[in-house]
Amino acid sequence: MIDLSTKYMGLNLKNPIIVGSCGLTGTLEGVMEMEENGAGAVVLKSLFEEQITMEISNSTTNLYTQHTEANDYFRYYEKMYHVEKYIDLIKQCKSKTSIPIIASINCRTADDWTTFAKKIEKSGADGLELNIFLLPSDSDRENQISEQLYIDIIRKVKENIKIPIALKIGYYFTNLATFINRLSQQEVEALVLFNRFFSSDIDIDDEKIIIGNSFSTPIEYLIPLRWIALLSDNTDCDLCATTGIHSGKSVIKQLLAGAQAVQMVSSLYLNKSEHLKKVLSDLENWMATKNYKSISDFRGKLSQSQIKDPSLFERVQFMKYQDATI
Ligand SMILES: Cc1cc2nc3c(=O)[nH]c(=O)nc-3n(C[C@H](O)[C@H](O)[C@H](O)COP(=O)(O)O)c2cc1C
View 1 (cartoon, rainbow, N blue to C red):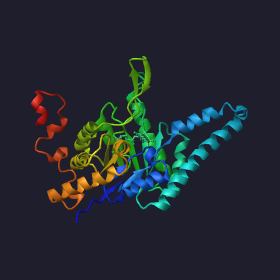
View 2 (cartoon, rainbow, N blue to C red; view 1 turned 30 degrees about the horizontal axis):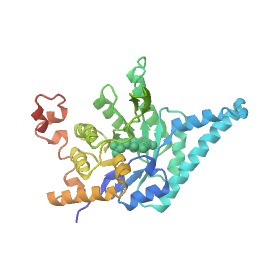
View 3 (cartoon, rainbow, N blue to C red; view 1 turned 180 degrees about the vertical axis):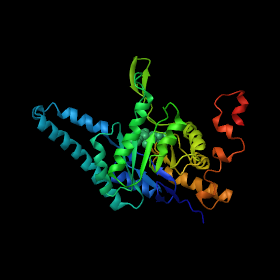
View 4 (cartoon, protein in one colour; view 1 turned 90 degrees about the vertical axis):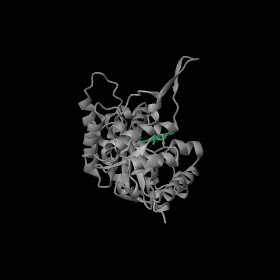
């Protein structure tokens, strides 16, 4: 018997494949469909701090909101309304499914939204993923200021809840390894490497800005793969790989590099949720061929500290074309 179970963020997962935060996990039906197709856990669609703020600014055109107290009331109401819908979704998912349900907040400040985390915990969410991203595009802003904000957000949220926290981040940091290490020491249970961001593109015919491709391509798994391999032995928390994981093969690679779990999104949009079954059976078949009985038999086997030549994951320049096949 092959055992696909794993522990992630202190939660017991029947397998390491998590459906990442996206529109597919924004409804009870969507979450149930993912469970039916074998997901080990789901991260719900994010509650966006930005989205809430936008709702508030729309409502300020209302006459009543010109009064400061009324304005405060509407701000509060807007936040509660949005949050209440989210809380309902968590409760419904918890009552209708049996896989871990991880709530998600997309945030950029350590402001009052952090107290909402309490409601998320009370609603029964098994964990909370914080998707923090500040595009380091302000050339007057010192990197320490942006980085400290990540720490402040974690601390503020930790003051409010006891459920496990995962932090989903990008890779635009001055010294990625040092910063990831520092983050892993902030009592977060997991780091999710790496978020794939919405990108703008340019239409050269109409010469205007358009929405870039929302979905990843299967080659993008190489970015998290390198960093999971480099960091999985040196961080104080679990690592979860995300971006470009489209197949059983790329799941296996991330596990070999040391990931505790993986998240998939684009491939489920492109191939529908049944694709999860194929990915799981590919993982199971590979384990059978290799005679592995459980994930722990091979997880981290090819992380940087386990391979003969640790410099392989640090190599960044091509010397000869054929070197790419080392
Ligand atoms: C349509 C779509 C919606 C997404 N919505 C969210 C979201 O609400 N919160 C979040 O943290 N990530 C969101 N993401 C990012 C995914 O969770 C994931 O990190 C990213 O797509 C990389 O994984 P993939 O290569 O498997 O798609 C979204 C991605 C897509 C394609």
